[in-house]
Length: 397
Image (cartoon, rainbow, N blue to C red; front, top):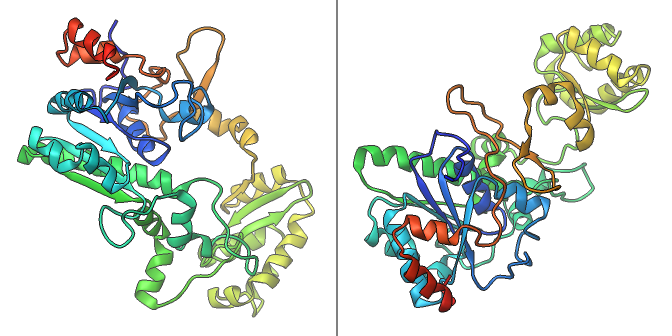
């Protein structure tokens, strides 16, 4: 039975997945979820039970990162294992790895080595700090990149010290940017006929994600500081207490601020000299927030969300993750999706946040067991039954 594809959008491409932990698997997940023929290459020397970087194989983290893929085992430290990889690479379209830059060269699976075998290969690399430069041999870790990339200096409440973001944002965005780079290179290959090396790093991704905060320094020499729940430029925007919880209110520009003041029953705030202009509201934001909070505490979250949105003022509840998945709009979007599975185990994961009208993505296949499709994959690449048996006996696969 043919392996089910998650979509037809990328079904013509074959991807060799050498990645581990999070940033690399995040990249390859994008390709797998859009139907690429992804072959996850499990290191034969790893613990098949799942004691590996990234947590146990049957854990929610691994399951979330590796759906819609197949897996084979391969010992790349054995010269015969390298030969197997080379045969696969000759026919593949994409290789993705997130080894430290020196490791792949020692194994003989670096870009230049693979390009000699297959000039059309698109080779994606994710590292902590880049493929060269003074830090290129350092191991990369998300929180290190958050700190070095400036994010922790602007996250958290003023005076409370640096704060990490609650998700591995550097890992995740590096993976997404690498996937974008790979897709761009595949599009360009249609014109040139040649592949190329796609490189990104956790540090680069984190700096890019600073976006306007980085631009404020580069253009205006303005160093952003921690602002807690307050938006750095749109004021008043932040978290406000209600009679039974908290809400977010966002105002951008004078018109929305006027509508907000009317909706909360305080039109006089618009003409108050401390709040009449954007610079004045910025200077006096703490006092303004306190005035707004006195009023928002008088009604429930549900009431304010309804009334403020009806008045054209962006407002929303602040959910815990379980509450978020119960929200009517979230349920309507169908982003929580069931994954095909065997037995009594129920697998439900977060699907793609993008919808294509003709070639949508779906949860087509559960994450593979350790080396589950080794024989199947090797057979597809032209290995005979005798060759496969010999590789197994030699502990190459």
